Length: 180
Image 1: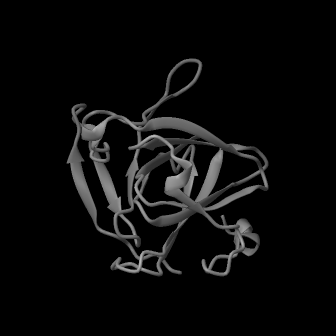
Image 2: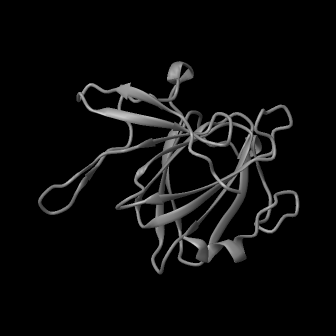
């Protein structure tokens, strides 16, 4: 699927820098480039600030932040949450994140999004809305580390899983791995 250029929304942060929130081909899925600040001994990587346009609504409480490692050559797919919204960033390695909109009532039902996340040129925050299937794979010969901020704590009964090759989702992980 070709991804057309999508409109962006400018957001002014407290640091007086302008970030671009990018819409995607999946309704409710957004991407925000994040800052990488060079520093002696290693970079400082932004993830989430209270003035972030993608900050979850924690009115009902804080969910959780956790890390998921995906080994080189491995695919972790498919999963979706009925109640949980997630924010993904890849501070270590590079990963291909694939979203599939299986929501029957969505204006983008049936759309797919492929996005590379990681350093140095694709560091950012990807918002995955409720009801959207997602999966990911490490790119290259090293593992990728995915940081996930969820708006509710993990509940195994709230999510669903499918195997990577399930025919309900039109995506071939084996034949798409070398495209990036």
